Image (tube, rainbow, N blue to C red; front, side, top):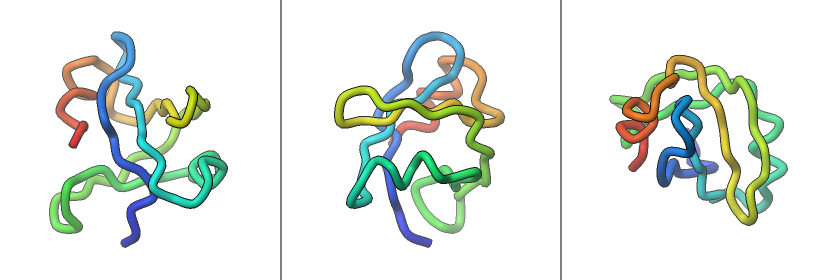
Length: 77
C-alpha cells in the first residue's frame, strides 16, 4: 500500500475531510474511486470516494461511511 494523501482535519459538518497531498500531483487523488483510511495497513478501512475537490494545495473529499464531523475528526491522523 502506498500513501498518496493524509487526512489532516474535518471540513464542515457533513463528514468531509481535508487531505494533504503526498503524491506528486493532486490530480492523482481525483482519479481514485476507493481509498484505504487508517494509520497502518492492519487497521486500514476501505472507503469509496463520493466526491473530491481542490482547496488550495489540499483536496477535500467526501468518503463513504464518514458522514458526520465526529467521524471525520476520528479519521484524521
